Image: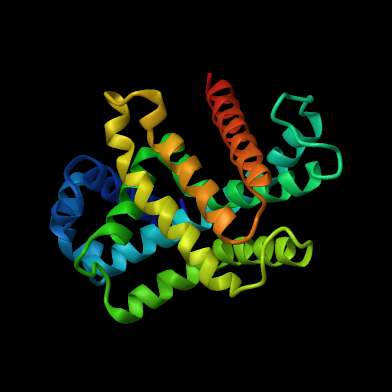
Length: 251
């Protein structure tokens, strides 16, 4: 095995160990010393790959975000196929409004790629959640800015979708970047309720609450109530189909 291949393999081992530690014990348990022990390497050896804990977290998180970026593109394409195959339903509006509903639903599909990550790869989700949800900053200012740039492509697609919906007259004109952060924050915050799904009634599940939140926000952004309600219903249907397809592919 060539030197470059050995280094790449070692980085993968380190990333897997780091993800496992964070998922099982939290971010505070993640140290260079702990990872070195888990991968049976010397501490000094690992410092050649990652000069600090922050560098390791940043590298792993950036790799996850790159995968999430690809998932978002794939989910959007799969959502469009599902919409094209959708049959008429009682809640489906007239033919004139249906493309507008689909546009709003696509916006929500783009936005919720992060929530689907929780079911697709718990360890990846756990690390991103730890980095973004901790009250105290995990990364330095420069590190946080670099990670924010990695999130950029995912948010830019949401911003582009919002801009298109404004141009179609579905939403009232406003700052699409600000709206994207409001939607992202609502999604991220409501995602913390998922631990309650084990004992909550279906109508109080995290996704049910998120659907209600999205409906209210879309109406607040200027969407007609019937369009917002139909869009969130369609989004939930697509979201379930995406995850079911993932589960079927694994089996």
